[in-house]
Figure 1 (cartoon, one colour):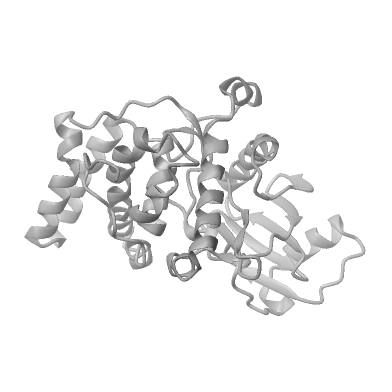
Figure 2: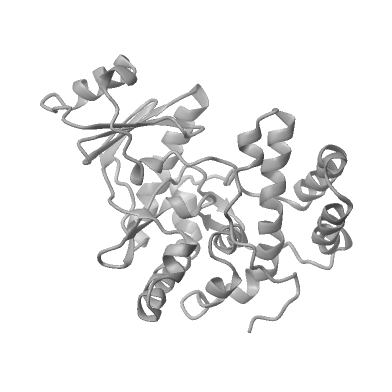
Length: 315
């Protein structure tokens, strides 16, 4: 979950020239697609894992930035082979995969922001919320034996009680000196149910997306529906509350509660999700302070703040 998008190419056309793109990238694309023409190139380097070249608004080419990014691409390919069999919404279908490089056909759409969703008619809102809920229902119910057979490992977003307590300790040590008293109180109240054991953090592992911010959810403004889901690099076994937490951050609790009819397990995960979403900006801020990177500390500006306290009964 702690990743920037590698896929902002879905909404931002940079109109770059070939001089902006490493020649090794262009050579690789030409080698794989011998008859390709570079009529239009979009180049995106914002991702922490990949550089992305979109060719002619049709072909997505992703290049791992570091050696560990090669493993992420390989893992994502394994996850997608399973996901494609169980998910109705379009997802990337890798047509070429080698170490450090993948390509697939471009999925059209723009980020499904909260403002975009709230401006839709009630009918269109209901359709989109149902799509979002159904995606989570299908993903979280992929049979465990299928995941085991495919060798799907633990998601990088998975957290244990020990992890949460360690995060709380690090936040107190690193962030508290920079925070006002009311902010420190909010953090103490957020972690209180975990520290006391009042919040049950147990769960049955399922396949989670692990990283589904609004810019990984593609929206077709003409058809007014979700047109695809991208970026499965963090997907793996974990707590379904992780994914619901991200949707709380994306759209707020009022929207998420409307997912319940198509995602009936919502009541079982909502409290863990409420806690989890509260930690996301702390996780980013902590990394930003540790690495002296302001952009990381500001990563969650614009997220919804409409989240109920742990223990609130679903309306």
